Length: 237
Image (cartoon, rainbow, N blue to C red; front, side):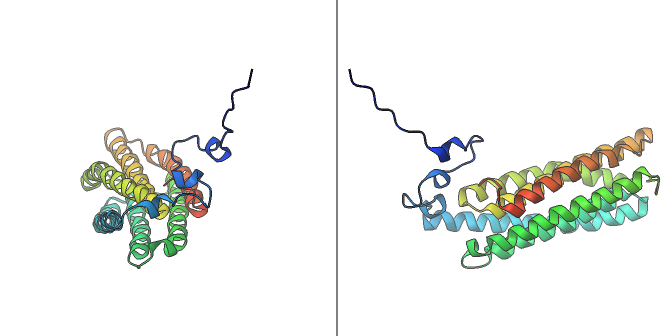
C-alpha cells in the first residue's frame, strides 16, 4: 500500500500568522512578480494619486490643527493642548516625507528615507509627550477650561480615523510601507485626540488634572513601538 505524498510545508508561510503577508512575501525570488509589480500601470497611477491627495489633506488639516491647538493651549495654560499642537507639527513632517517620496518618478527608491523621517517623528512625539506628562504630574502648570480645545479634539477624533483608514488601504494595495507607516502616525493622532478630549473634559468637570498626562504616557509608549517598526520597515503592507 503506497503512502500518500503530502506537500512539504512552506517555511515562509508558517511565519505569516497575522494575515498581513502578501504573495510577494512568501513566494520564491524567481517566481511570480511582487504585488506592486502585478498592479496595472493605471491602477498604480490611481493609487499613487490617491495617496498624494490624502497626504495633502492630512498636511492641511494638521497645519490648521497645530495653529489652533497651540494658540488655545497658551491662552488656557494647557500643556496637553500645546503638546497636541506640536504632535500636529510632527504629523505634518511625517506626511511631508511621504509626499516627497511620491513626488518622484520612482517612489520605491525614496521609501527608506521616508521611513526614517516617520520613525524619528514617532520618537520625537514620544519624547515630548513624556516630558510634558511628567511636568504636568509634578504640578508645573494648572490648565484652565478650554472650549476651543474640547471642540478641536472632538473634530479630530471624527476626521482622523477616516484619513488614516483611507491612506492605509491605498498604501497596502500599492505596497508602500511608508504610506502605511504614515497612516499609523495619523491613527496615533486619533488616539491623542481621544486622550486630549478625555483629559480636558475631566479637568473641566471634575478638576482631575492628572488624568491627561497618565493617558498620554501610554500613548508615548505606543509611539515608541510604532517608531521602532517604521525604522526597521516592519509595517505591514
